[in-house]
Length: 386
Image (cartoon, rainbow, N blue to C red; front, side, top):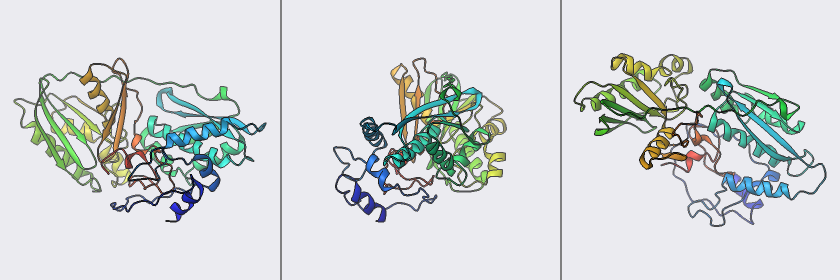
């Protein structure tokens, strides 16, 4: 391919031909601009032991390490500076990071722009945010601000983050690190009591999983296939309710509480603020019918019993912590997509959106596109069943 040819000409002598792929047609068209030749020279690197089925695999982490080594070796006066960024979330929460960058007249500048943009994208899908604040060299900040505009490379993130947080997207450049908002996180605590008659569900991109539990003992489990591409919210409501009621019928008494998980961003109030298992529901209908879907089901179908829904990756981490009896645990859910979460030593959660399926994972310019985003090489295409 054209992309493969360019990468072969620049990195480690040559990139081996990619084996044939047999993928379902993507739901999103890849719109990422091609990585420049200059950026390739500073970023692209394969593992010392190449992946047998994907010999051109260029892990993001190895590329970042190579870049950091290259910039650390730069001895040209005035050619290296620091770039800082902050991603703000509601409640004054904020993620901070920094990256050494090359000057605009250095051959590594385009690699700096590329890696800075991808590092911000990583934090956005890891923690979430609606306000991006930049501090660093003027030319680089201007390039990043443009990339994170409605017409830029990261238009998907610019359009999605406001849906998650109900806040407008903004990018601001400041002239001093002290003017960046401070780093702040607020941990979230999740109950783990399983007494009485309870049901739980997990919404994935291929099926709805349901479980019936009595005093901590699993009485029944089921998997119900569904079509996540259906644009009708009533279809989704009916499939979820039927799956839940069929499983609840195996309990010896009335449902006393409901626990759930879903792909995408779920608010602290169990609202489906942006769940990508409803990708084709029109935006105005989504806000009216899908955002409150979990609370509506509890209220309308189960007598208003308590309900708590969190991200599917977080559920994996919580379950892992309970299984081994301690925290400081990172959990990964490998399904049709990929989810992840982290529990601290007290088994509290990070309060992040944890949508790591959309994180950059492979920088190979010929990496596969993600059906759910316009980018190449996202983690979901590697850490899942795809």
